[in-house]
Length: 152
Image (cartoon, rainbow, N blue to C red; front, top):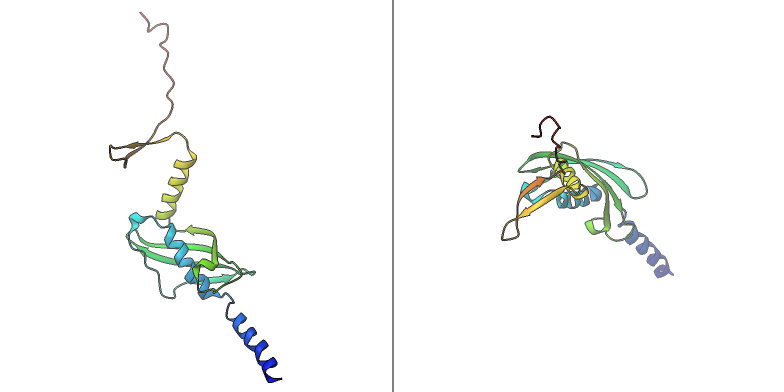
């Protein structure tokens, strides 16, 4: 009879260990935020525990923190959603619903890339080694018609 009582208690204890919390949301946000920082910014470091987290319910947390990189200190806000199963300490069990860089160097880069992708008048010129060397914007220029006075 004691065994029947112990088994449900152990199962409950094991299942309760998989509840997401603010700390696991912060740890997962660090992984997903770092993936969005351009490689040109070099090594990215995060604070140990300097973050603010709000529980938005249903496994969603809004994390505000900062990171340090070659561009300086960059603040960010990430909305993280726990997928509902698995260890909350594993970043693969979280999905970033949004990531916003607040003091801009990264956000400007992302916005620039979005504009380049969405704007068809952006062209890339490549060297012989197929590496991008020059990025220019090209616009269609209408030919100027000579006025009747200017023609000879």
